[in-house]
Length: 75
Image (tube, rainbow, N blue to C red; front, top):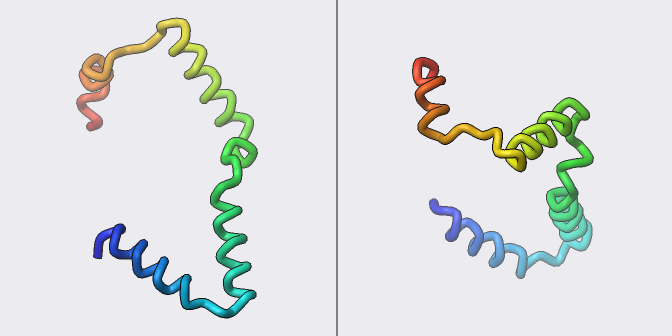
């Protein structure tokens, strides 16, 4: 089953729900999924991401083909 059909089935199922507690659980799940992932990221990961952004902004990047050449034996 493809994702589009699965979504349609979920929508159809949601429209039939009468159980308020189940609807609240679904809403809580949706809200959890919308939270900012940055706050759950470790300091080491944040520092690594920020360093990568700094490198990108200062032009310290390698092209995809250069990276593939360097890491070819592990790919």
